[in-house]
Image (cartoon, one colour):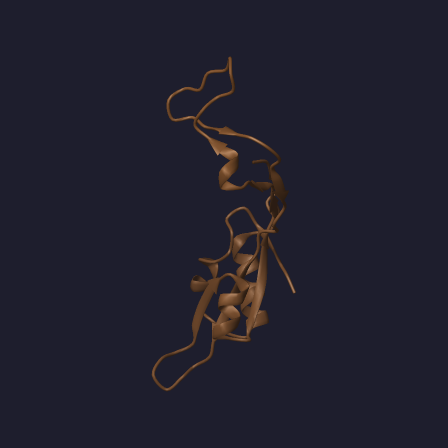
Length: 123
């Protein structure tokens, strides 16, 4: 697996029948090792997640939530995407921009969802 920046990672997958604990003739496998035969299929998923604001209700105050876009979208339509990247912008500055776009939320709670290495606000 190779890390490509902070926004994308190379992964591969195979079929179960391509995995074997037995080596080819003349080869040796150490204990706990396995062989993969055949073609590996690579994929390059983009790493991103959503931060959203659930508005006030009668029982509780507004709440910041985060996770995969599909999960956050089920709870609220007021969310933004964060794409981790190697930026030089401060975590607190990114959190302030997110708070402004969401039009609410506790800054400390928002900062818990901002990546340490920097990030970009998606659409």
